[in-house]
Image (tube, rainbow over the protein chains, first blue to last red):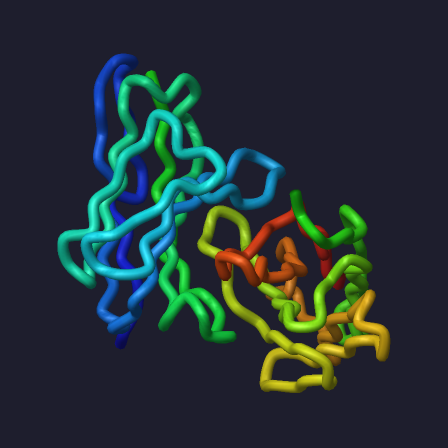
Length: 114
Length: 110
């Protein structure tokens, strides 16, 4: 079945370390997205990519970096510059940015800084 | 900022219809309304979307008022598995992004 795979499900990081969260999709979707979710809050957009080799900052991009070298993959790196990285991270994809179709989400990665 | 307003929480008895309201008074003529739900610690799940007309699928019905300033998501026969946070979202037409609010926490009680 087609879908989005995020790994790992739980991740622990020491302060000052960079960490990369994986997101892979086999839906042949053009657009991919990274969101951050804090307890009791909605989703906030970190980065999005509408096509391979191109991506744009979302509302809270500081302290994060991404790459989009392949259509299927959109990894997110949480750098040491991110002041409060402990959160639930969600990856999503959609067919194309301009269509009315909805997003498909992965199951998320819960990052904890120890 | 989110373009929608939802009550923070609602209760509904199992087997009854759960009707979740959403206000989107600043919606533009070409912006869609989307509904998603998120079960605890999982990724959001798409439910339904609409522009002007009412929509129905196997999960729910979406009723949009004629002036498009509000909508209601209806789950006709709620089950315990429908307990989740429900998000009403308007898409930003300038960059196609979905703008998320805090949603409504729906609790289905036996």
